[in-house]
Amino acid sequence: MRYKLLAISTLAAAVMVGCTTDQKMAKKDPAPAPKAKAKPALMMGASAKMLAETCEGCHGTDGNSFGPAIPSIAGMSEDYLIESMEDYRSGDTKSTIMQRIIKGYTEEEVEMMAKFYANQTFKPASQSANMAKAKKGKALHEEYCEKCHSDGGKNIDDDSGLLAGQWIPYLQYSMQDYTNGDRTISKKMKKKVDAVIKKEGHAGVEALIQYYGSQK
Image (cartoon, rainbow, N blue to C red; front, side, top):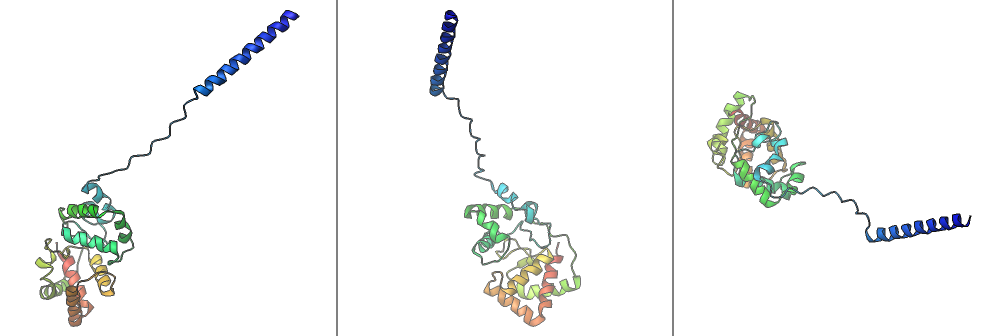
């Protein structure tokens, strides 16, 4: 019985020593903490093409719009595109969407996108126009608009936008914005538009729009 108790005491002491040793080792060598998941790397230094791809949902592939309320911006003057985007940023041109979107780009990125789109090929909208009105619009264009929007509104070197071949609904909405004061308009353009309206009424403006939209 004595030997039995001694054996049990010895075993208990050994177990306690083992536990103490394990605890000391645990304190010295704690289990490594699980590694935190690495954050995804941010995309820096995006190319002009990559930046332009963010615009395709509205302005179409390479700037040729599929929707009648959105302008095609391919082939427009680089200076005109920069000025237009900065007008959205400043609020000089009002827009529910563009005013928000443009604030996410730096001036350098705006310049990169403008250069990219200026070097793309413009494709006229596939649409029908009222040819009787378009004929009248051609005469009005030559009298009032050709000096700034040369070559019937096709000249991409002008800093006044590309009109020929644009979507007719977009041109109609834009002219409404100009006349309502919701879009920046130069004194020269306002003078010309007012002259057309005074002579032909708003039917004259519509004739101009049909003329530009009829061109291929």
